[in-house]
Picture 1 (cartoon, rainbow, N blue to C red):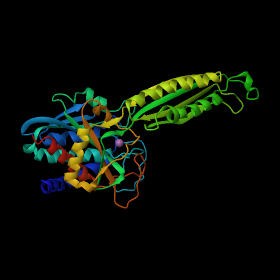
Picture 2: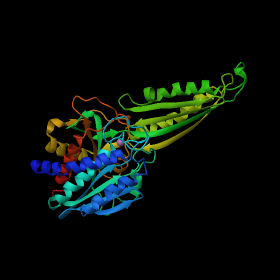
Picture 3: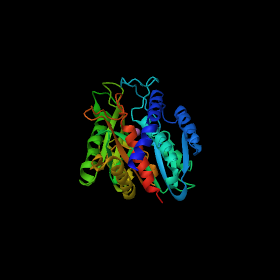
Length: 393
Ligand code: NI
């Protein structure tokens, strides 16, 4: 099968590259993926799939195999990011200040390629494949996955297993990264408002300095990770902005801090905000100030189930050879809204190596980030092999 599969992927590859160039040149921000959905929808329909719009820009395609069986879902996200492209590639973004800096153009093109190959192989499939083209992955805290789930993509027929990929610059092209258990972190937002009272900067004893209180709060909160979270577990608490004060010689009456909290396990995700609320308000109180805490839950941790990870490892080994399947030692503390599906259905996300051998590693969400084209067939092969294995009946 491996040789046949590779030749089928080779046949569709020129079109996959065309789609990818086209989508890359016309990036669309979250919930505005109208043009992209407009490419996906007719392609799926032309393959004979049952196609349905989910919300305004989500697309679901259902492929029925020759025999009855389980239902596998494959998901791609389609949205781009608001940053200017500086890749210098011949198919650079034509939209000022918007680019595919997270590789979702490649995700979309790969999944279209998979739909083509699997629709040719449907006589070998016992069951159904649902293709989920999802909007708005980049919109933490709400995400686009909940829109798809509310739109019913996991039901009728119920999805038994769901898979996804994300391009990965830290891995070379030709390889994939897989792990069982946490793959990416929960991403939550933290808002703190420290309130004091202002007075003349030369007479601080007459007011309550919100800057001094907020500084102590920031330092104290570092102890949540170092003193409250087990040394064998992981959490990140980062404050990215501090805003406060009115004038150089006035004691500030208000400081607003914004941060992000990343965790891998539900119990740690519960512990951090509890400690945060208690510690921030008590430290502020110690300085005569008050602290309002708002903790906004975003994407949950993206946790690969053992059966999902095993399916991907097996498919990767068959399609690429064992040495090209990298067992990822650690999860990544970034987030993915694919996590919402994994809260409901078994499955897994794998990392698709996207940097050419010997090439410079440019991180995701960077203006110069570009997926190497040679990664496209690799992603298609792994998805197709996984579908064939899972729906072999
Ligand atoms: Ni992404």
